[in-house]
Image (tube, rainbow, N blue to C red; front, side, top):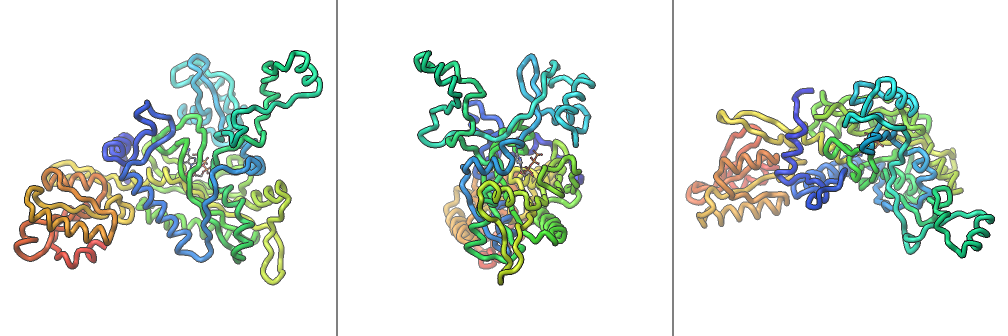
Length: 486
Ligand code: ATP
């Protein structure tokens, strides 16, 4: 990696300057949730807009959707999430705190890749690994990460499954059913149970047939969706990297099974080009070919794109070849054909799928880490965000040299209005002296500052344009300003 950035630098910058705050902070927080402030929401939107423009607007083989977050629970039964969307969990026997077993192994220098739950548990015993509080660890088990909730007027009722014998006993007891509220009797998959979606992908697969019927696309074609996903992570950590509520940007790209390799390679190239548009240096991104034992059951090939985060090199996004697993499952569970018929009554088959799956929070962190720069200006240390112009929260900041000189403020307001009309995301900054304003804008990544001074109003109508990266200043006439900043 080209430079080392500490997690604390990123977290404190985000909080101090209004990018990202702890969720529900005023009430002591809610672990794994984060709120975006005015600058964070701009940065996030710019990343998501760039993704949509790159992968949807600029292509003619893509269809966008925005599916409901709450979906029929059959979706998650068919996809395998109800049975297998688990993470390994282990509990501290003293404090009862719960930990992710594979992370605990990693933290103790063991690579858990490819290990079964039993092998991981045995390694904990063999190596006498303890909890971070130094206590013994209990039994390991799988923990399902989907958030469950209940829908409609049945939400406050519990469905219980009772045998005929038990119903007779219930009558004998005068209808007191409390003793039957055991985990075997309570119906957890009653029709009122719904899950918050743990991925956006299933909202795409369930709309595949709709898109085919409405738009008759030729293969290959893709369906894209961005939006919230929820996972009940055992231990959320590393700032927004592992959150319980986050956003994904996913494409399911439908291909003929004979040429999935070619399309997979094309996606590798397209992903790398998108990451360079995010300003991530090439040498901080690494492709990890996921070994068979570690791949999701449906995947025949997966590449994890890893980024050098401050905590470690970790997954930024995944590219998976999912075969026809999902559409076949939907066909089996719904009884509706998912076959694609080549135009003119040709070949019929279930398309195979290539899935590039981006996480927004992980992209934001990678962008901030890549942009975070320290240098020296006039013998003084400076921290600044070297963000690409198209991602910066503010494109430009406008200042009157002095805020108590009416004529300067008036002219500066005119320039501000002009630039605001052109770019939208323009800051007005008249606080403190000019040096302080530059530092403040540097710290949040504003590429240019425009200053209106006495020369502007008394002499030649030019303003000072100061460049964030070089700190150089030049005089530009107001007429040429928007062109200069474009
Ligand atoms: P990990 O192994 O790190 O838990 P994963 O392999 O389970 O991630 P996927 O199911 O492939 O992740 O999800 C696709 C993408 O969604 C990830 O590459 C990541 O960018 C994002 N993502 C997944 N889980 C989280 C999370 N808890 N917080 C933030 N982003 C996440």
